[in-house]
Image (cartoon, rainbow over all chains, first blue to last red; front, side, top):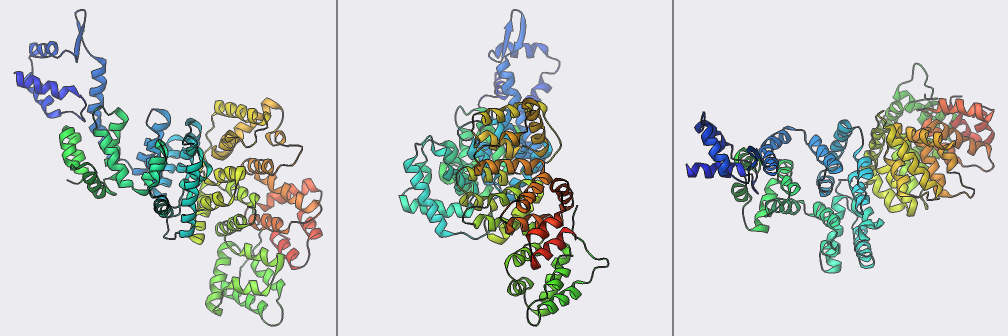
Length: 313
Length: 313
């Protein structure tokens, strides 16, 4: 009995985990069928989740919310998996405008999708919300990084093989100069930085970053200061697998907040059919542990099973 | 409606190619024969003629034309031959590579096309020039012009009819604040002008007019002609009342002293198979003479004949 209570408590805790152990819960319904005393004992034993107002028993709101999130993880991942990628991207971007999703989601989508995929997402956005994503980003996001975001989301980059190497070298130098002379706060609003990052083709930018490293002896990310938006932009364009692997890792960290945890679902769903193998390898190299092991250890129930299937275990 | 007139029945592409070949042979060129064919075929037919000519005579029609004729006539024919999408891509590139970016061309292309038409231009631009239109605009334009042109060209606007009246009122006020402060290059003006849909923008300008008894273009008239404000007004008019805009451009060219053949060619060639009829009608009521009369007064020779043929003489 003590064991059952323990495992049921665990199943219901939704504590710092991902998903819920539906199997254990379902088993308890069977076991404790027609035994209201059993349930009553469980409730009084499980303080923290259940409390009393006078003689009335109630669930703690906090716990309810947490559990709701955990229950819905599986539902969410199923719905997202079935959705068209364009609709998914459109909805994720829309969340940033109207809830408190981190703006990095926009950077992620704008920079890691192909030009066609981003265009599709923009069309889906218009069909769903009767606005262009550009107008919404420009209107709702009024931070220092909003010009960069508008530029990134507007981009329709050239994807052909041609790269003007001389121009790439020149722009690497130009970036170096801007970085040296700008205060780190001003960097993100600098016209040249925005122009180069938001209009050049990805191949061109990779060449530019390479030249930057040769010129200055260190990768450009190290010179971007604490500019999260700029860092993420460069990473997404230059080394997307690394970006995704780090996003997953943040989700698993102790005390990760809700948006960080949501990125686990988002990354795995959006990359499952694209570059999951590369992300797994990168993750293993970077963090010394296999992604499937982290998932097995930290997630539960059907949510866990789905994740494992998606990453191709 | 188009002013382009096509004979019925229209000769086959092979017949047309033969006629052109005949026009090129011998001493000099039979320009009238050239005009009789080229100025009276639509985009699809012109394309077929190019193909037929090349197959039959093993040389590119354009190259031959360039060697046969010259000056304003040649420039007009060259721009005319392409289909509207490719034409705009080519003209955008010419405008960008000019010593100083020829901003009216970019503004017109960015503002009068629907989002999908502009997208088609961008796709052709990429295949022709191995760069995106945005990156070329951004790297060649400077300062406030860069901000404006890049924003106009880069946004994939919502083309629907949905309007938000409250938003229109708010944004009319934002525009007024910037204008009264003389901050014509304000980020907000550029944001509203470049990201809002045509319908929303029209609603905003109507609110502005209701509130201030002055149209926004009149409000933007400054005593000292300022290129940037001119660009701003052009953008506003292209986005909301293109017919009036082009009528005015024509009237300025044809009724003032001096002559800008490139601009005249641009308007006639870009609209002959689109909406030159409406522009012509408006011109007649405003200029007290027909467009044909005005063009005949200010141009001569083959150039004049070609333009008149396109205008629907």
